[in-house]
Length: 242
Picture 1 (cartoon, rainbow, N blue to C red):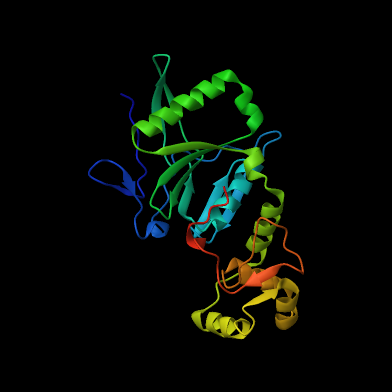
Picture 2: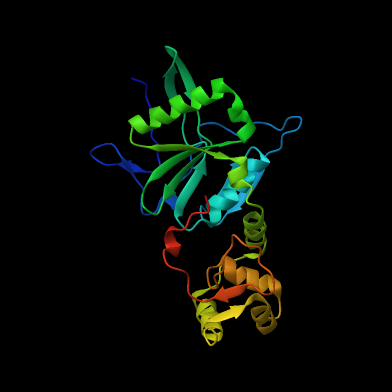
């Protein structure tokens, strides 16, 4: 049977299924490999993750966009890149594989994710390879899935998430949060335009959305007429943008 190296930032139950630690964000990340070097037509970089309190490495623009989705999906407790390398068997040969990301959801479910353009999966050899990898993870009680470009490139959502990342800045103190909530609670439902008029700067309005003081539908482009609420919708804490 092929072996799997379980991530070092979680413990396991008696039956071998992973559980997320309460302070996973404070653990030191250990990547299975270092990011690849820049090459012709390929770029890489780092994203300053507030959720993980460190830089997250990405190796393609598609990975960069996926990171935005993981960062702002409230149902994702923690995530990291290149978490481990497994050995799986295909056609009686051993093959090494490193998933792009590991996600720990609020439900404590652990998922392993490959970021891949849909056109790459047209190759029947690749489809067989990833199906075998999926079976391998399933055998050990893990979820494996492929996050494709047409699923990641949700245009309006990515525009909104990009602005949230750009303007969120330093976290508000508890005192600042109380002051803002008290000021905004006089009108539980308002608009982006009205909040901006009240506070004097659209960047501050975006910061309030990023800091989860104000809430709106981020799958639709946010404009002056967008309705903002001081209370989140039902099941907000488990919301996933994928």
